[in-house]
Length: 83
Image (cartoon, rainbow, N blue to C red; front, side, top):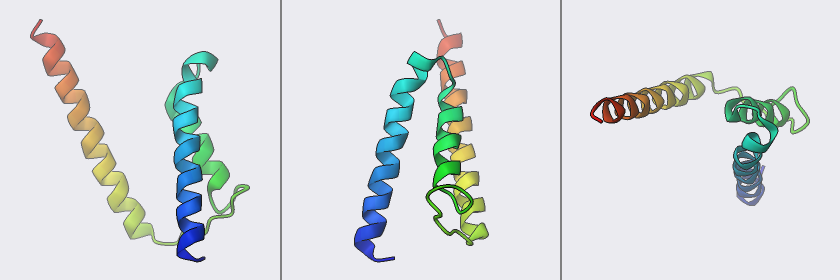
């Protein structure tokens, strides 16, 4: 895959993620369900057939994402308890 095709694919997936977050409130579905659906459709077993075999990278990215979400939730709960 060339760099141009990779950038185009990343842009399309980003736009789908933004669109799914906008439509989640209208559909009454949590945004996480729509994000997971977009990821499953783009993955190696889905319509997108994007190959991914770097499991160490996936573990690292998932761990960092979990830490960021945990930090955000902690900040939200500590700011709401001050009121």
